[in-house]
Image (tube, rainbow, N blue to C red):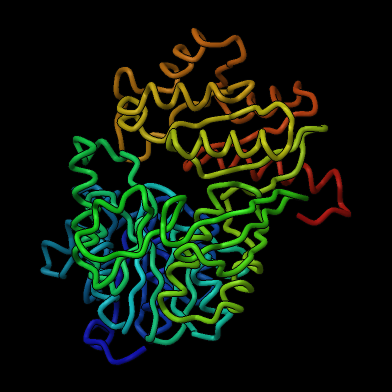
Length: 454
């Protein structure tokens, strides 16, 4: 990494909420640049264990003593104003900075910043682009909001290229001035911050204005105020001759109506074909050889919690996915039905009350695409309960549409209930702690089938 005043200026950085997927990547990047790093979080996790293992000072629980001797404090928007570490930093005049702004400053040290934005698909597309750049020996640095299989959430490379997720929550992505802005989709989300679809779309439009060049879904190209590269059905890059076979998808990529390359993905979901088209467009823009684009995408092994096989319960296939928006849920259910030709059981843990209430009818319509729906209590994240936006409200609305719906108050009761199904595909959907249910099922499956590796 080239000389950067941010890394030269600070000897010790403290991260409040270091156990978050995005925060931990930034902490590791700083640590790799020779900075002393400490961090705190409410609970111990696999992430905090990993950070402690590599030599980062970890504190479980928040205490003002954790901040002493820090030159700057980085915090996430999930941290409350009355956090004792934040209060102590303010009292003692230790500079504090929100994670997104800190990320923006880190981006300034790279020659080319490829920032991937969208309501969904950011992690997968960032990882796909990274896979191609790695295959082409471009040695990119990658910061993503998920665990890429075999790579994790951070890849440290040279300072030529940074591939990074750009989160739209609270307009955080406007802290980045990318070389290339990538916009995958603009499906209204985060209603606790954006009060309308227009306000939400305007943030993406501003994000595109901050970039030198834009790669965008043809469905959203009106948001870009400059010449842009598009992908999708009517885009500059589009797919033809799509074939689904043996859990894979094969398709031809056309560029401006001319054949460009054929690709076989280790995925059969249509939305991953579109994700791959975006990656092709970005990588071609950076003049990566066609053969490297092809191999990089065909070798891509996916991201944890993104349509990940977790084993079986009796003869039922269990898959977990991060889907927590109605569009994602519908795509996931429809892709599963097409691939498996079996009944689909959707287990859904709603993520925040505000999202549920604002997109209520869309959630009901998407979930009703499944043959059976199991509702779990809402993962509230940063929010307090909102009337009309709970998992019980969703359950009651779905019950008027179909008989096949149940509400389970705990993972334990849900897991027992799932054993009653026969020869179905069970989708565990949500961005919260439903992953613990998925891990429990995977652990049981491995224990009962000790010769099986998944």
